[in-house]
Amino acid sequence: MRNVFVAVALAAAAVAAGYAAKTGGVPLPWILGPMFVGAAAALSGLRPPQSDLTRRASLVVAGTVVGHGFTGGILVSLLWLVPWIVAFTVGSLAIAVGCSLLLQRWTGLDRRTAVLANLPGGVAEMAFLGGETKGASTAISLVQALRVTSLVLALPFLLTLALDKTGDAAAAAVPLANGVFDSRTVAILLAGYAAAWAMDRLGVKNAFLLGALLVSILDNLTGAIDASVPNWLFIAAQVAIGLALGTRFDREDIRRMPRIVAVGLAVSLITSAVIIGAALMLAGPLGVPLPVMTLAGAPGGMAEMMITAAALGLSIPEVVAFQTVRIIVVNLFAAPIVDRWVR
Image (cartoon, rainbow, N blue to C red; front, side, top):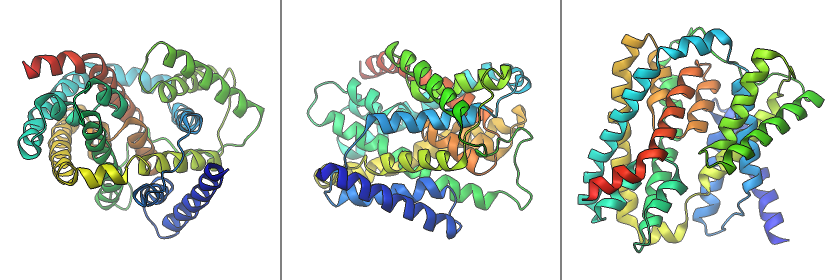
């Protein structure tokens, strides 16, 4: 009963915080407001309840919304970017591995833990590879969460300042959800969830985002369901994602590892800055606007960067393409990269 009360109270506070942030003109308000609420609750020792179903459902909604912005022409235009995306992904991994030496030196972490903490992969996946070394999984999860959270917090503000009054967005910018909720909405969400569940069973990473995205793209190309998603549902998904980001932090972990928190944040920002800098160098040759390329290259989480692009009215396909390839490459090759690195 207590968990239900806490969950309802947190959800209400998160919605209020999101609305206040939107009223105050904060970029990405429905993620940043709830994120602060979740972090405040977690750091107060409240230990908010976690719901896999809510997290998965929010990712399915986000993937469905974004997928409807893809057209056949956009998909074809992305094909020539594939070699560049792969090259950039390899380069970004090399940057993360190199910068992990700073984390190792300044915190005293072993080489394996430091590189896993700094690789732009999933929190759970990298922590699992940390093995049974005492405190390794906690340190990895903490640094990974710090990187994603800091980028989600900083990039919307920086990009908002960088965009001119007319909006330096690509021609293929995807609007936010503006549909109506009906039986077709239910059908597309159920289809997306089913596809995502199957992909998850096959071991695909970020399956609940990618599965819904693929189903939504297919629907947009064929008109089979011809569904739309209302804005209030997309807002609810963002609130859930924001809360999940904030509640990743544990007061006891931060109290036990203050040095790792401070150094981890610093090294994460250094790594992210170098990776984003490399991405911006590709913007001109690829003909991709700088703000779009910033989010495409940023190691800040696929769902978070995708929603940021949507909220700022930027082109999403490039962001999705770059982030998806990196997720695949990191999760396929993280273990052999780490094994070779620690030899």
